Image (cartoon, rainbow, N blue to C red; front, top):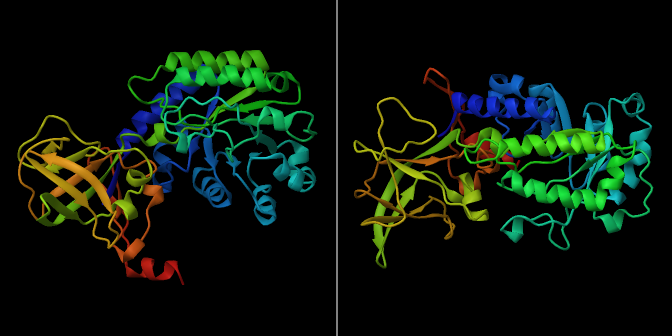
Length: 393
């Protein structure tokens, strides 16, 4: 079961609200990171809206967040653009070819003519600050954003915003480096009266204890004063980080070629694919009478938790119940032998993990629940055979 803590969400968004008010900017939820819409009412007042990666996310934002909607996609089709023009507030394009293809349609729309709909262009400042090339949108040949060289001499009629998104789980010092590159390559555009907003994207680890929020506030204020634009931030992870867990049951334990193996009721590939896609190792807790002092984001009444380590006497390779050989979370060490029926709690599973789940191999999908501030659990959704069956029919 996925369980998301309302109290933890509200703690994060309270921090985000303080930051945006201090900086005088706008801050929205990136739905690609967290889109559990039944949780929206609990923190909606702290944020200005949502950013969407396409039509369906934008519709979710319109229907359930009911505030400002920013939409950006690497590519749109005509039908989607036609629908998005009816309600999105910002419509950002990834390339000049996309903008030129749809510009006439967009600019003819009554909402564009009235100023309700603004359009922007994602740019690539070609300033890499991350450590993993696979997730770096500034690498040579990136499909995300247009470079200054490609933009030179182009007819930008109809555009009023620039959008960059280059960070991934990074501090504000990397934003400062990026803004220097943005100034060098695109500062002349931002200073013109044509451009009225600058979207600094997501990847800002604003709610982490070590994050330098004062620097972020300074950078945003400096950008607004320098360019005379509205600044928008769109974190997803910072909203939902350290707010949720995935609980799993040990279904089998055995040994093979000198390795202890534990088969769980949840699948890495089906229910937590970010463990396989990214260089990410989750914290794992064993529900046990002994406890290590550390606790997961969501705790149930009467339970104690013992955090797994990387090395120890009782080391197990944790894997899922699918027939995919690579369905493995990793090797974790416990303070005692694992037994069938033990409960393992995977921490920090609310952001990105929940939005990527599948019913691959017909494995049962975990239920989704909220933990209210009084500790009570509300199950939002339980999945059945029909959910698996109907997905491909």
